[in-house]
Length: 301
Image 1 (tube, one colour):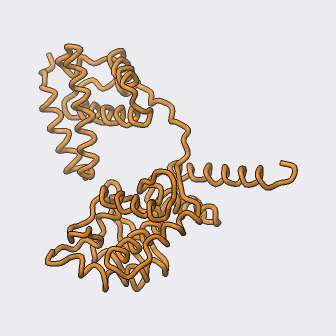
Image 2 (cartoon, rainbow, N blue to C red; image 1 turned 90 degrees about the vertical axis):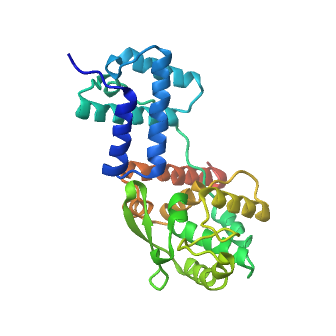
Image 3 (spheres, rainbow, N blue to C red; image 1 turned 30 degrees about the horizontal axis):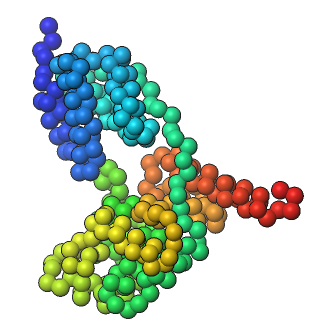
């Protein structure tokens, strides 16, 4: 008879595995842990005490409960991946049956195209941070580097001074799965960074001592939330309607690169996508833009 193992014990082993052996980021570890603990709550409600007692009908019921809560298909798909990964580990380490979630299908992806800025809108954002005061210089350098590289906001806030080679126009980025990559940036970002690092960052730092490239007005390393706040202030200053979130800058970078003739593989490498399919979504944006332009301008459209 197989020895029964407490779910919490298996979870502790799994978290150590993905943190230390798989080298997942702290954010990913936290998401996986939360997903699995929510699943454990479901098991408790259903009075299921053993991980081995989960079969396909129970797995389907859990997915149905997530739909009932109004979760998006993307969120549900991620939670299924978390639990499937957990069960795969449990099977390899403890011999726990993992067939229920192996058989479970991911929900179809929602056909939503990523939101992006047109070049004129971005120009208005850049114009909103003109000035030679420390805050404006910081904001301009942040936006220039963000748009020049298309990096994720978590990658932007993790950049340290030693990661920037301003003479070559290259930044070292720590991406998902702690994979390093080097991303080039152009003369606009070079100029803005040089001015920020010389005339703004030393003043904002005050007596703080750390190596983070971008800092807030208190001199501490800027956070993801801080970047969102900076972008919202730019939107207000530029009098642009609508919402903004950091990933829109990344979407804009990819869309503009492809629209101007960059090949898919190059954009994939710059974005740090492990799968080409993640990059291909941007071709749908450019095709839709071409279609709308045609329909609005051709005399016999």
